[in-house]
Length: 73
Image (cartoon, helix red, strand yellow):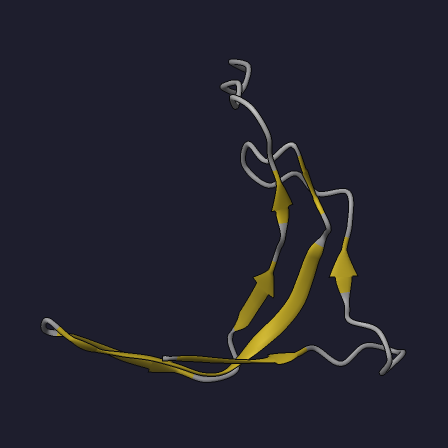
């Protein structure tokens, strides 16, 4: 279970968004929308955890065609 809430910024009418940040092989994205967890939990298969107030984000990626692997450093 994951319950998220928006991070409150200076303007309550707009989300806090980080732009100009690459996300894996996505060709473009709309920015990282900053949210935080009100509650995050898992109970099963011998692994149980629960967190509250951790950082999180939402992102919408745009992709078409074949992704090219990143260039070697």
